[in-house]
Image (cartoon, rainbow, N blue to C red; front, side):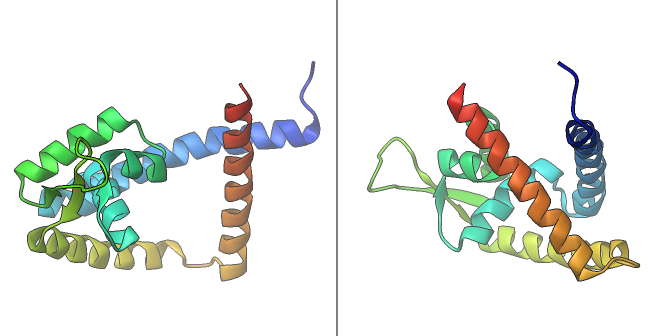
Length: 152
């Protein structure tokens, strides 16, 4: 079966998304290097900071679309650096809650400042309407991919 015109266009978008992901990870590594972070560490800490409360490793993995084992490795690294702590989870003894420490919050503030300068530069020549439209399209495609994964 041949792809439709829409299928060809969506395939091109998917391939570009893979390239964009690589470029974003490299940029994230550059943005976070000065504070001893990586894109992966930033992503995991961002999930906890963004949730406004502590999360388990499994919850972080689900929210970020990552493998639980990979998140556990990163949480172990972050714990060793004193950027997160593991706290008792009264609801599930074997799944501690991950919380950002005061030092981790300071690191995230520094990264957020660097990211704000960087992203504001990327916006040059783009409108909010364009960006929101692209976001909505990506969310729709992600939702459909996740639904088809559940059907397999």
